[in-house]
View 1: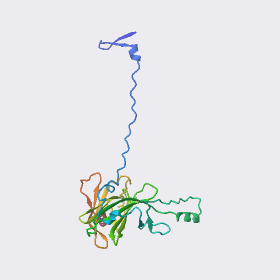
View 2: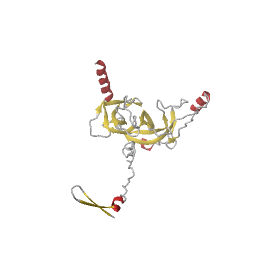
View 3: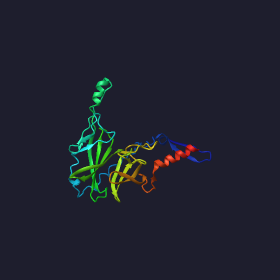
View 4: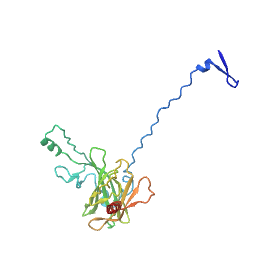
Length: 270
């Protein structure tokens, strides 16, 4: 039935009851969109690329996948053993898990059965001692039965018909001082570790700067340091440079630890 009415100004407005009561089209319901979680970056890409994988040195034919390595400080086994022998590039860890209901004696005995695991990662060859012959830098991963990637680097030269170890050092885990790259430049060994002002001191990577915590998977900085062989040891050369991963064109920070110490000392005097 047609319903007619007059507005205040005399304009005729027409509606039908059918039109008034007709259902409105349902609004389209869109499923909530979720942003896919980006895949973690490949932190080993440079380390595992094809650079420096061959050499004319006898080291190039040596079987580093079946070799005995010394264990660095902090990674010795509970029984005091200081060496580990790879077999086909691998040694499985022995976890020897304990439970709360174990008595102290049993728990101690189980813990004593634990053993470090190790796996072969890669070998790089370049001359970093200045003798005209390539050294071998063998990279191993400490097996923890978890996602951690602490690594060890063993620098070998060829002497008396066999490899001679001249420098072993350990690195941290991914963003926490993990190994990014190794290479030779101008007769020096360049070591790059993830993190701010992370570098090798003796046989160990330095600890992190206080407050410099981030997700292990996704480092935002890396540090480049250089080392030169003096006939007995590798000594650090020049400045330590910390680079931004997100902005590789930005100027690096130099010797950041000393800068922070200087700032703290200035604040203390005020």
